[in-house]
Length: 161
Image (cartoon, rainbow, N blue to C red; front, side, top):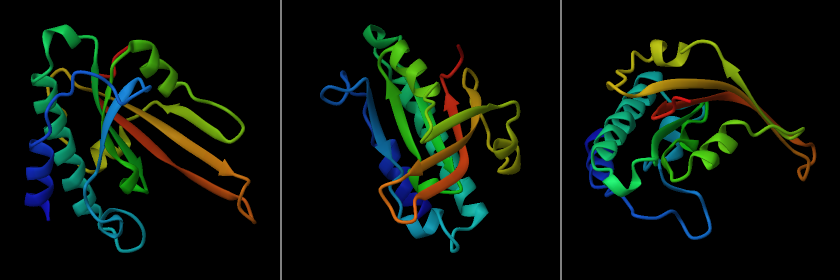
């Protein structure tokens, strides 16, 4: 499974524009949800998948065209639901800033002062990449009872202010 994941992510090419009408382009983690989220997920496999995504994003950053130097290459890791994870290109600095600062009654991100998940999984962060962590909360009142989820989100890549 890890060879397949590595092969799929290494095949990614740098797009020249965002998804239609969006400020970003992304690739979701291409593994079955049960392998990286929920009771059957194993921390070692989650860490391997995260590292493969980081390595693929480093390669993608090296392919960045000169005309798109302001584009940020970022791995977004969700925890405990790693199935939310993706490699994302933010084409405009203001879109990236708005992504990081989302905050409402139904969705909160609070910056973490540490890199605990990165250390716990012993992830190798490439030169030029940085880590930003957030505690997250989301609520959806359209369910009965309302759905609530607390977790972590880790941005790894070209995330410096």
